[in-house]
Length: 249
Image (cartoon, rainbow, N blue to C red; front, top):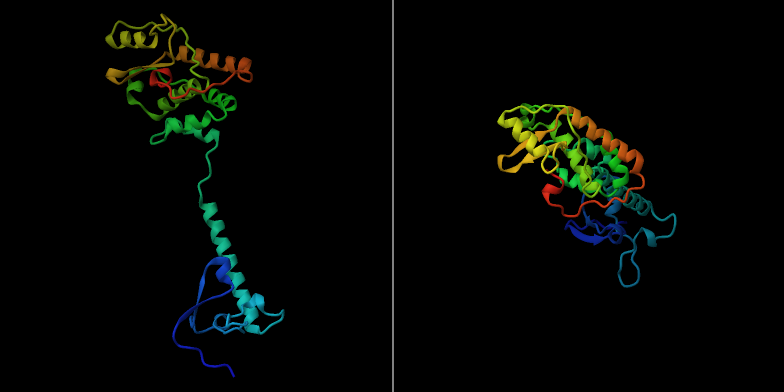
């Protein structure tokens, strides 16, 4: 006859102990054949050490077999939880996704550009394929919206990946006599006479200037022709800790 269970809860290590590091609380839960099996005392080896299911001969008592089933269930549950945790980790963004979010509000643009520099030959082509024109009006430049920021960050990323490469173009636009137009022409053509940059920045006034649309189209076309002719063989040397004026402005 099986002796009555000790009502005082005590801990003992089951076969799950060495595998999962989980103690079994003897006396809990009190109901259910599967859990009663966990509370059943096993045979003892010499020296009073409890024998577990793995020490029992094949086809041992039913409670031993049920105990082994319970341990397997616990192990499978733990593995399932680990798999769920692994699946919950966010996926690494692709290069195309990083390029698409350049200039978006709250995005870490510098970090994305640095990651794109891990594979500059391929990603330069993706950046060039994404280039597009933007309105060149003063209102648009002052609005500082995501469409403008994305276009500017595409150019910045290309400068970064290619070690500072840049293109300029002339425009048929006639700059007016207003102070705004004079400043715009001055900063866009700074040190390059009539050749205009895609954009420029007046730092002390926090003002961005955008090249006329025809110059933008010419600059985009120059990037496309360069990549088609030299992009595959170009020795890419991404910028290392560059000054802002070397790529941001």
